[in-house]
Image (cartoon, helix red, strand yellow):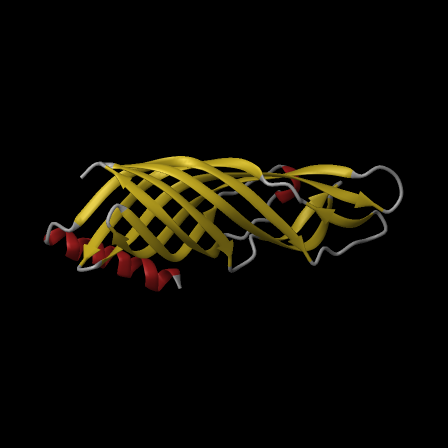
Length: 201
């Protein structure tokens, strides 16, 4: 899918730029991260792994807005940090705590419209997971994942205040590492995202 979406987005940007319809800006913010460890495969040591509490991460990068009649297309390129503690319930003995900590490059492609200063949008996001060689996700991350985002932004002059939700379409990892042992699971990531942006032009 990414082989179709992002060349299309590039052509759209180039075509709109020729007509002066491209706007670019910077954005940064915080994200509350949720991770689900579904279908955890237990053994004689651990029977369950859960990560119930949301934790904070951060993000920053570039966004573009291509205005097309009454709607706009919004590609973005963001560096995102995600952090989540989890607990593995032991069959016998004390439970074990671990960290699901990694970084990725997020490439949302959103379509939206405006109602005065309010903008609403939705679309897909492709995430390039950066390699990690430590913790429970040691060498277990999928190379790339797909998700979806929906949200809204309030335009205040050249500033944008945004809120959006991101849900998963594909798994981020199929295994985690506990006490040097790999456990099969289906790790899914979701986020509530708060951002402040500034349109440069």
